[in-house]
Length: 472
Image (cartoon, rainbow, N blue to C red; front, side):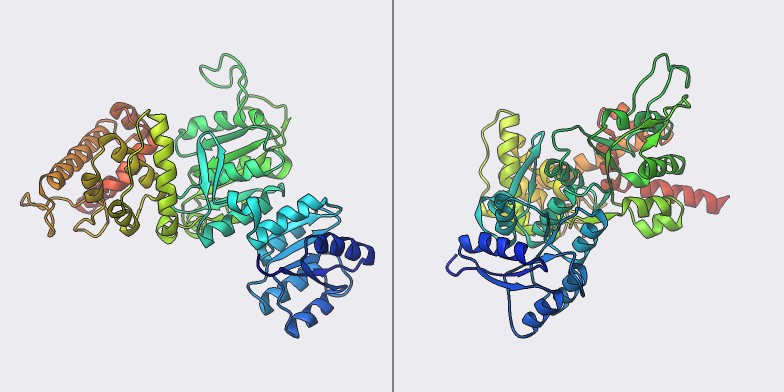
């Protein structure tokens, strides 16, 4: 940096104040000190504008949390790191909610302090690495936008606090990737990470999937089987689509969150586990609680801390980075040479609204890599006549939309119609059992759900049922 950063250090212990000040001055930071929260706030009122504040939690008079709250009101952009002799989970969560960037437990090593300062001040390798970060199993996390950098910072902070975290966001925004990042950054990183999709497993099997069963618990249970919670002991479990979990199971999950214990199906013995629970959903929480779809007490248990992922359309500056990463990794996976991403294609990608978020972007690039036709790929991103984005559809007269589109658009529209009709037939044939329909179509359950939403098939079904009810 061209000018040394200014750091305000606030601690009521003179020895600790001198020690940390010495560590900071070794690296040529300009250090101002205060021994109370009141003194720190007066210094700020008089015009002090520190680049970073290191703030002790336990102080006489105005404590660290109250000082933090007032400091954020006076200097909303101030970056604050809390210091404490005890790792108090409630205080850590409260500090995060008040806007603290990080939390250090005393005594700490200089390397720990340096790493935190590097991230907060945007210096060094730690900050650079956070833009594209591998989180395992060929999954990566991108934090190039201001919103995602904040998410990354909060994830790093909450990772070290053993509390449930609720991950919210539209479908395809990367909630599972964020969960893997939290696990990677946590003390449980060397332990098991498991994901359970509550929407993909039938309700009558989900309980045994999560909690296991004993022989004779139900027809076909010939031997004991541990559930995901047992297999994940000491690790992290992600309960994806938590809003789809049946209310009866939500009550049992609440018991696990309260007591870290449960019983297998068909057993009276209690099993104790130590599992970090992360939950993800894209549902409207207040509406789900009002309709009894989500238990209110479970929500408050899971909502120890919430991370809200923004949709891709709100972080479009990350699209070129995501495209490059997807292209490189997919080309290697499919043993194909990576295709160029021309300015024209990048511009089309930036202009697209990406209603399917990262999942749609990934699938788009997969098609481009396989077909190798840039013109077709760019045309695919042209808006439809119905304003929903994506490829233009044909009108009743068999013509493409107002902007034309030619044979390629017509072929694509015909393909969409054929695919939609095949899905409708499979659903009708299986009496709208989506799991059986997915098996019949030889696609994954999640892919079927996506296509049902894409073609509005579920809505068509509801309209048909409504019409039948009104006519009866």
